[in-house]
Amino acid sequence: MEKKDLPQDPSHLDKFTTEVCYVTDESGKYTTTQSRGWEVKATALDVAWKDIETRLKEAFEAVKNKEASPILFYMEKKLMDLTLVSSYTGFWKWQVKRHLKPTTFNKLPESKLQKYAQLFEVNINELKNPSLNAD
Image (cartoon, rainbow, N blue to C red):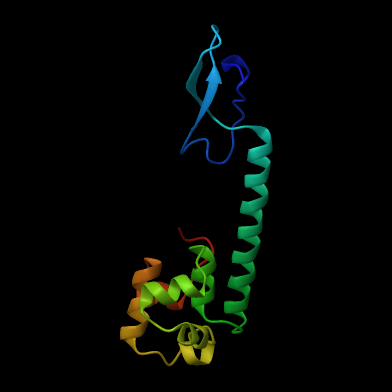
């Protein structure tokens, strides 16, 4: 692709990053240049983020309706799965699964809540009371 034809379509990551691409210059030699993105990639990224937002809202509703513990919400928010949470907290996967139940979560000692709070970068109060609009 020639340097002048490289797409510069903005995406959600436009403010954070650019992409380095190999292109050919006017003399036909390969060189690198930066691209803000291209429409197809931005569309795919938008679809992926909408899916993540939907899953986060569903997790929040499940927590609000006492169908799941706040751990589920923060797992979705931080794009983590059971294996990742288990490895970072030191809990077995079956333990994390149990902690996803609101009745079990409400009985957890502060030391275990602190491990989750530390992992999700919130304090214990925020862990117990997740907010959909918080950063």
